[in-house]
Length: 151
Image (tube, rainbow, N blue to C red; front, side, top):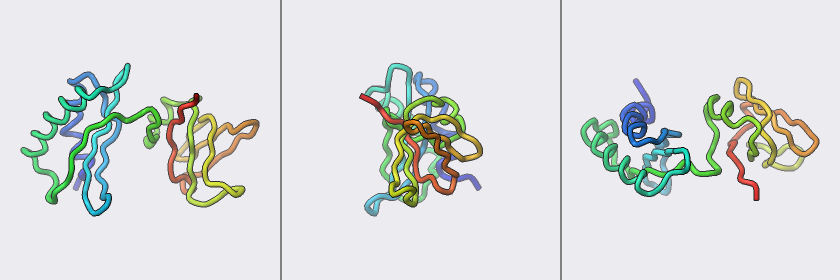
């Protein structure tokens, strides 16, 4: 049986693509006692509210028709954002050389956050350039990796 996020991705992807955007991620999460279904989209030049609205209306209709989620939920469509989380191998490949923030589950050398340049990704392990150091983090150490905007 497919996960809810996989089913929703299959329903939403053609609509998102037709709207000139790409589907970055599908989240189905419980927050403050309420379930949220989120589509995070991307587009060259950036996503605007009209993109989100058009996709939301069309996908909402598809969700009502297919009814893949038995419980009530809040449906949201938004931009993946400039500081988006990297999750899939293709995300890491796309952003090699980019500034990122990596968060660990447990402290390493007294800290749990490392800002650096994404140097490599291999089987879930991430290598960062942090100042003059090169640090490798194994998959089971990593809580989150996201792009970092530098000013």
